[in-house]
Amino acid sequence: DIQMTQSPSTLPASVGDGVTITCRASETISRWLAWYQQKPGKAPKLLIYQASSLQSGAPSRFSGSGSGTEFTLTIRSLQPDDFATYYCQQYERYPLTFGGGTKVEIK
Amino acid sequence: EVHLVESGGGLVEPGGSLRLSCAASGFTFSSYWMHWVRQAPGKGLVWVSRINNDGSSTMYADSVKGRFTISRDNARNTVHLQMNNLGAEDTAVYYCARSLNGYSYFEYWGQGTLVPVSS
Image (cartoon, rainbow over all chains, first blue to last red; front, side, top):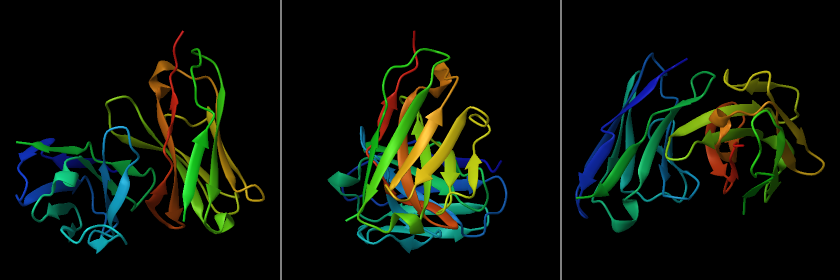
């Protein structure tokens, strides 16, 4: 199975900050990576697919980059609505696997 | 607008069975692959199972293989997850999700249904 490792697990930040979350795959996944945002008690929402393609309706302050084994999700100028947990997911191969999550919390 | 609505969750005893359903609307159901993803309380997301658009191909996580069965009814726009021999480790919120066929990322998710396994 492809292991996905996210860092950090918790990210204290303030409104207006720029933040970056890293996701590493245990083997190359080309650009077959998605990012999701999840708020407590809610289903995840797709933000980014194919490493850097912004899902329709997702705010443009979210961006993704990377290929192979290392990927990043960047939030430019954090907004109050962005405090949530973020997950990466590889879809290079089954079983589909997720990172452990990064909780962006208020500093 | 795409809607996915799960049902069938609830308290079940260890060793018991449960059948989850996911009703889809707002899109041509028979054109899309469907998945189940679960999340144990306070934990991360775990992919469980996938069925292709016509039901001819299924896949499972090792942790549920042989115990869970995914199926779909394209006439009723519904996907099911039959769960047998449940254990405490299966306690989770179960989400159904839609993917763009061979590109297995999850564009749309249901609201989830909770399955607690406890005596």
